[in-house]
Amino acid sequence: MAGDIYCAIDIGGTKTLFCLLDRDRNIYFKRRLPTPAGKEVEVLVDTVNRGINRGLEETGLATENLTGIGICIAALTNFQQGIVYQAPNLGWTQPVALKDYFRKTWGCPLYIENDANAAVLGEVYYGAARGHRHVIYITISTGIGGGLFLDGQLYRGAGGFAGEIGHTKSYGEGRTCGCGGSDCLEAWASGRGIARSAGRRGEDGWDTARIFARAARGDHRARELVDQAVTDIATGVANLVTFLNPSCVVLGGSVAAANPFFFERVRDFVQNKAIRTAVTVTPLEIVPSVLEPEAGIWGIYAMMIHEIG
Ligand SMILES: [Zn+2]
Image 1 (cartoon, rainbow, N blue to C red):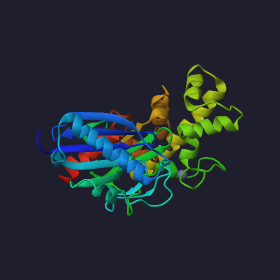
Image 2: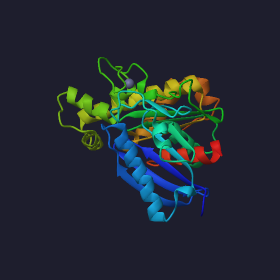
Image 3: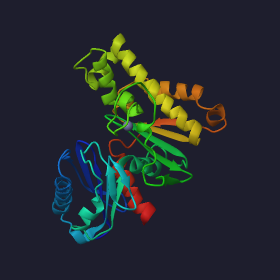
């Protein structure tokens, strides 16, 4: 296995996942470490570097074995520049030339990509969207992220910031969002958004897990909160289906997974609300992610193997 080892890393808001893999998808190392969110950039870079080194040490590999390092991150990122422009989850207030930080340590090719952009590629190559050329991926958990695979390729947009369905408007009145805007889908329908809605109704202390548990037991107030969020998400999906005419929509994240009727309700809503031809003439699949919580890892790996070479 000398050479041709790929390091795939997913930096999330709370955990960072490290994997070392070869070209044949054999995994040599997999480890989760806490993400040092809210700290200086150097602290995160140091954590990532230590994670990679730990992987190399534990597997007996050398730096020279690394063919590429791919990092996906929950942040608005320009792939070509390797710059993170906005990262509310990490608490960075200024653009960060993240690739340059890692270049100081690693000589192999480095790639920095938004996590949902990576995840849509993962689902296309190895997951729920295999065989599709027009795919929308949305993950709904603490926040809401999205990635677009259009006409057979990842669609990044002019600056690399396409797919941010979580920050489309307008899903309520008067609620700020982590992006700096207000009344984004994420501010209302993410796990955090649902908990905020509960707090606004005087149900202080209801975290998202508790709301889902209560809704599953038939609690009327909890059901209302969850129903509204599902309707908001389904509205966003219906708009995207009308706008982009995909053949596959992959939905991931804890909010989808925690609701037994989530997919049934989103499918019904989209069938009734999206423009008719986009859901009748074109076969449309609305399916759960099959790679979670590792869709980003597989996507950044696929990017290194298939998209870059
Ligand atoms: Zn927003």
